[in-house]
Length: 171
Image (cartoon, rainbow, N blue to C red; front, top):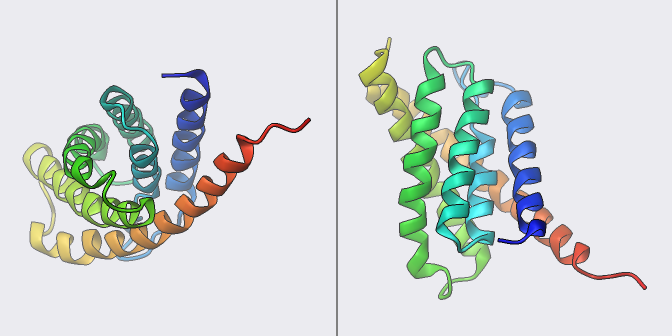
């Protein structure tokens, strides 16, 4: 992997961490994980498995540092690792068949549901949930998937334009 891609991935992860920290709670005090959208953008930009898994682990650590969910630190790291592996396998067959626009929408929608399910499962198994799994899934994970899908598509287009313009060398 070249230095330019590493720098771009690092910047995307940093932006995702900042957005994860500053996004206000939307529903019942829960915040959508915008850093997931950045992780899926990295997934679309990079075809290398090692790069994606490293980005997933780092995104999990950064999300753990900024989480407001009780007991969510451990769950964030595990959920991002599971999510990036599942999404890498799911996106691989469609990478060359579908446009990046469709891939990012599918990745953010499905990936946020996978991530939310993994997160709630880990929290349920380690700390316990004060409310039922189904209630949290329906009231937090599904709305977060809708928000992440919209935000992910917008951010992907902005980042895609910036990356393409940055590749042009000025004489």
